[in-house]
Image (cartoon, rainbow, N blue to C red; front, top):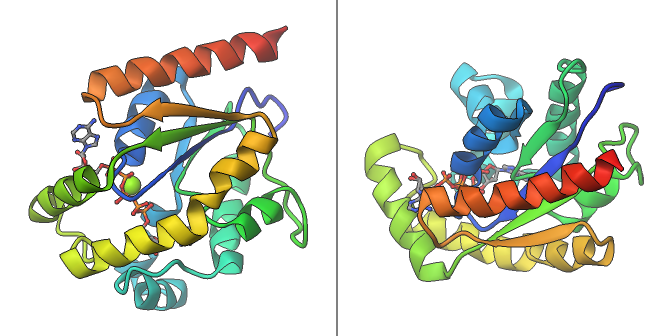
Length: 199
Ligand code: AP5
Ligand code: MG
């Protein structure tokens, strides 16, 4: 990652729009989009040992183990070392994962320059994911599993907001707007950060 421009973490509850906005960011800023959820879904589709292990957690709405998650993430990052930077969609998702990415108790440092926290009320999450379940057929979009994913988000992932606020790299964006307006706000945040990094 010698010529690295910026690594951006997209943080937020299930269904807040991380994957949707990551695709727009990738297109505009030419960054590599990496979703640990999508990497796990590929492993599950291929029937690999990682996929079989991941399925046990994902289909119950639980998080996958930190070590396994960092391993598939760093493997993906190492195999894309010529890109300008990464959009990290849905990772880190625990304080432990964030610590590991800083090299605490883990071999591969994954630097984070900017964290965009997509804020969204819980009612909208459920509405969006139940609608998506009819379109995409994701095995974790059933009402009971969605409820469980939200509980884990509140207990395990939300503390990352304070973690990154302390490091002065967190920006909040209102995720409950139209796709276009969420993206407009995200671009304003990224452009300001790129300007700051260029100084
Ligand atoms: P993951 O795939 O990351 O799922 P998630 O975090 O639950 O988030 P989603 O992908 O469901 O939602 P999203 O925020 O991407 O929203 P989207 O853009 O799709 O992870 C799945 C599982 O893998 C986890 O539960 C866990 O088990 C495991 N895992 C993954 N990473 C892990 C990690 N780091 N550690 C441990 N375990 C991990 O949008 C949702 C819907 O809303 C779409 O239909 C979209 O079209 C619609 N929509 C989006 N924006 C808008 C808008 N502005 N207005 C109207 N509709 C909108
Ligand atoms: Mg997603």
